[in-house]
Image (tube, rainbow, N blue to C red; front, side, top):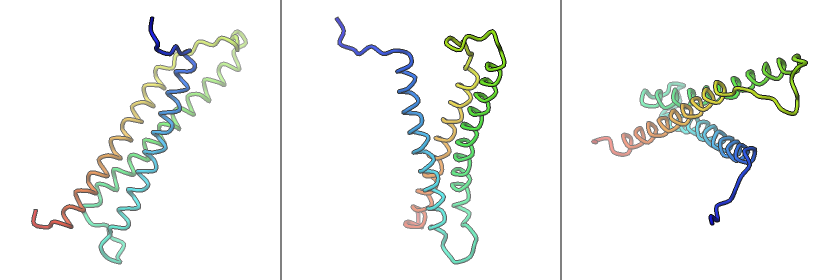
Length: 137
């Protein structure tokens, strides 16, 4: 006999939504923090950003862009899907069968891309800091 807990599909979905929503929030905050770090690491009072900080900045902006695309795509998809279902009189509101593969896969790819760009941005900032601290490397 197994002591593993049993879950309903709705519970599993809610767990996924909780963790993916929190991950998105953390990635967003780390990307914004990365942009702030780039701003702080500017070496002089001019508005120019050093060349070694341009790529991290672009990575953080891309991370935030994919965050926006993820939620916009999902929101637009569900808006139109809801409108179509509301207009269809043959739909049973208690039992709706919706193929969500497109939106699920697309938003998942956006989540992975924003994570990758955020990590790349922070790695490039660390590289910049190493080059400043140890210029002979």
